[in-house]
Length: 274
Image (cartoon, rainbow, N blue to C red):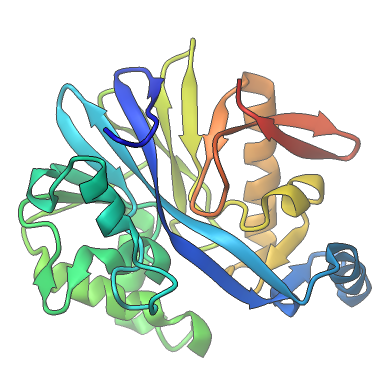
């Protein structure tokens, strides 16, 4: 691989940068209300957020897997670069054996599609059962805010283009040395994947944090993209506590590099992984 690989358990892991996502800083929300939200935006001090959009390659003895798939061509030229990064790492789409989806939002799952064709010609798609069940149920659409309904269409396309190749997964081991950990809130079945063993483990936590430093320091700080903001904050705090206690290395859809979690005051901080 041309990119730097990090070894966890039986897997070499590399990050594929799909691009940079930008949005106004007023997408921030806060569990303590409007005053806390305004204070957080003022502390942030910039008119917009600018965050990495990542997916990951896992190479092990059982083949090649991706964790998430980026946006493909769906979100414009600032994104969609994971495909070229995959090829630059020496991997062709037909070599990918499986994809582990953290949740069915566009920046994680739209890259599975190449127009009306599957981008990956033979890969199995592993999806958190709770997310797949929620977004497959059209009766849930009416109760979902308009700006958070895109995952229903993504799920329908996934089921059409990858028919017979989708595996719903419950929390627990999904592949040798890989455990699905439920982190609900950002989406109904939002999940992370823990890779490795007690000696050295990596948690790819999807979108548990969008603003890594700010949300680590204040886990009650959220983003409007969360389906259930209160539940997302609880999941965020719980997984930060767990990662700090265990010494896991962490990364995710919007984290730059590989980090470790340390307690700091009433919150946490992310430091570069050793």
